[in-house]
Image 1 (tube, rainbow, N blue to C red):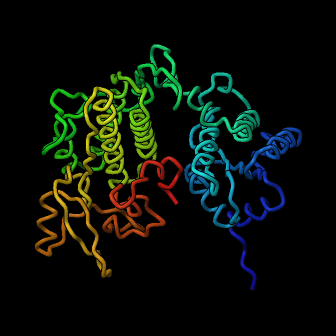
Image 2 (image 1 turned 45 degrees about the vertical axis):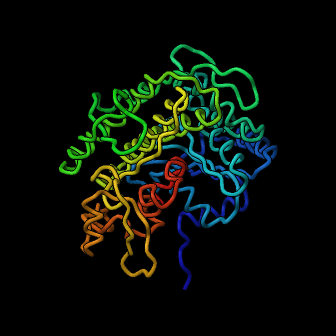
Image 3 (image 1 turned 180 degrees about the horizontal axis):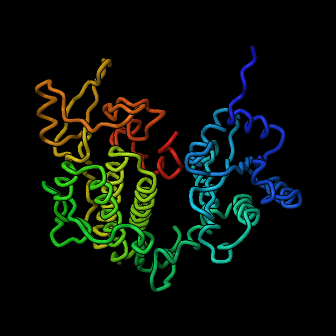
Length: 399
């Protein structure tokens, strides 16, 4: 008895015949002549490109571009750049499998570029796809992305930091707060830093931890509002930061801070419950750590050691101690950073107060969700892997 192929299988089968798949409902957006131009540009690319044009509709067959690309790649099983429509009107979304890290960054940056170009604001889909593909083929995705987003990083129009090996190095003032103007305005206090670390007194990027005490007792709606405020507050911190980024490490840290800000906003936009909202706070926290380190190094100080939030429940606040924990059903132990209360529970062989996620409508400890279904379980909110920000940006939040 034959089984009807899934939508993902049908798309993969079509891509084996042609690298461009267009849903019938969107066929007028890519007439034959425009498809020919796209195919010609794709042939000039050093990496294979697969274009998938399907409607992104909440509640429809596809409403998450990252999930669509993961599904199609799993069925097509070919490396290359997979490109589709983004969640926001005018956006494209892409992810590359295979190739070098530099190549993947170039491709995924190229896909983001058209959204930031004034001349592309009202451009046809075919034009936006063509611009992205041409940048991939030319290897200029990252360079053009840096140029296209310079207005988010500099209110004064001063140039970007000099590339490695070049002399000079302007001061980089950040303007990120404007990106989140639609979010809830205002500031809430953040975290209390303690121990032998760089002094944070008077540092606008890092302030007391009261927000987490509030978050732990909040309803889901209150937590959502609080997470939105934290994203705005972090954006304002980026906006106010003004320091020399001429050294490689300072540039790396400031880029990490901006990436964490973008990732936090991405999660906030699609957060499905407390586990995702806690993830927003974790991403903001990682970004604040990176920004504090960048400013310290730029001012002649030392790099600030990052301080994660509690592994068992990030809403508990700072991970002030370490615990050797054995997950249920496993022999090996994990060394995780936790708050003091959770550490005491582990040492006493009690179950800590764990943050729950929802699976098929029922609550389960977030780390017991299948790793393929949760970026939080897969990374332990960034404690088990150091690529949480990158995973969120490439679309791993929903798989």
